[in-house]
Image 1 (cartoon, rainbow, N blue to C red):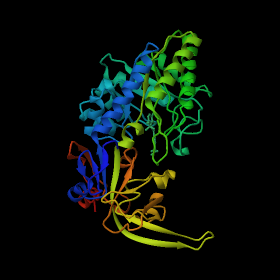
Image 2 (image 1 turned 45 degrees about the vertical axis):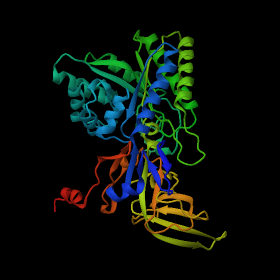
Image 3 (image 1 turned 180 degrees about the horizontal axis):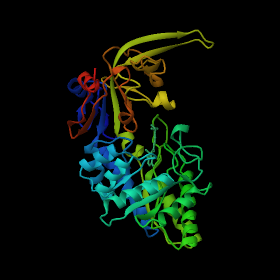
Image 4 (image 1 turned 180 degrees about the vertical axis):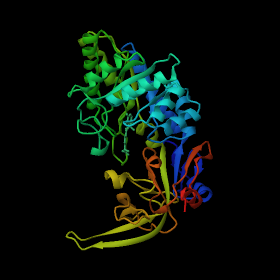
Length: 442
Ligand code: LLP
């Protein structure tokens, strides 16, 4: 996070707060989120895309994808910085509403929305429901009729462009053989668009595509935009209905390791705006309103996880080649960060409570769970004198960390602590054993 530095005696200081103080007051493991950094990244997306698309004569709405990490305060910050909020369940919708985000500034996603979720979205007057199946079209129409208040439901149709992009297979979403969206190639997308147009209960805002996550090559974004614009032009030619909006989804990649180059919002925005302008000119259609849904790139880099080191164990591998690896166990692991186990995701770590010896050892940071796959950091050089009681910081854990945390092995989930101007505020408190027992009916 941008506000992190080393203090006089070598300990990390974030937004004016010493990490040792955070650990002493709030315990470890903990997610530590730099509020100013979050706000700056949210603003950077809004400004970059607004400026770039102003050049091709249109406006952009930036939706913060709450699945990356959502709490009431974070939803409010996003909204205060001029973002809307993308939700994918009734639960996320409830958080956004509690934060005071107006319904009109919220989108609802989901490949299997329940009737209760649809009703809740209509009650809240959400700005868009993103349709993900043919049957959902009928169910939204039925929910609208039930309300009988004369208001149509604003919808977008999520389509699959066939573009393969992003990191791990589990997070790439626009190829054909997966559960999201309606296929353009297979004709379901066009059928869904016509079905929505035929429904007086629905207002068709546009088409949506999310091609994947942790994308570092921006070419996929422009390719997807072209495909959506062509689909829009075809629909206009066939039905006379020109979709006012195109939603390009999220997926902007971040740096997890030293030397990795993140997607630069200003650069992608410029490339995308140029591409959208050119394609629309070639198709002879006006430029639509654009929306995007970044999650990871807004919150991921703002947060680090603070762990305390417990057991340190050198393990000698006979080889060939023979080597020694130091296993550094911390007080969390796959219950607070599932990404290494699920996606083979890579992180780095630094000693946070002091500088440590200049000499280093080849280390692997592991959790406390009963799995050998419970790895936090696969491979990192740590000071040779790393030991029990040291604090470790693992950077860039803000996205899909706490939001995918679990209670595996009955480990309570860590808190999320926001730091700003020398103050710590608990956004989400640490779970206790009592919380876990509260769910257990005996
Ligand atoms: N919009 C839609 C429709 C999405 O499905 C997603 C992410 C986003 C926006 C935000 O994408 P982002 O900008 O954060 O890449 N758990 C995985 C990532 C799953 C992404 C799911 N959808 C991970 O930890 O890498």
